[in-house]
Length: 146
Image 1 (tube, rainbow, N blue to C red):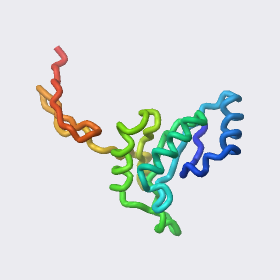
Image 2 (image 1 turned 180 degrees about the horizontal axis):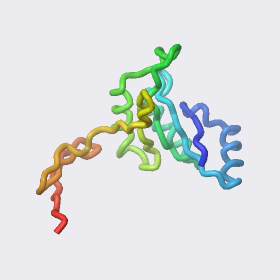
Image 3 (image 1 turned 120 degrees about the vertical axis):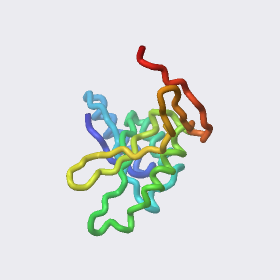
């Protein structure tokens, strides 16, 4: 397994496709780790297009990383809500294979932490209350383990 880093659909060029083809034909499974970048790919339509183009060249969208706050990158950093909004707009509007996991790489060595829109709103012994990708609420029975 190797993860590539395509951040915009314009990077999915014939040359990039040819390079990916060579790796795939050698037996390598490819994923992609995009970085969410302000004014570059911080739009759901751009991310959807990127992920669909990646699938066409047999690269599975794996992660969208929230840009790290390191020296010299402040102009690329988006609010976390931007990433959540993108994820909300991807789910249900493209193939599930084109929906990566939105990740914040936690500081101090805590590792990659998924950040997802909340679909599970509440849970108790008898039912689960959920929200669909369209924003519709529904109750689902929570059966006991008996």
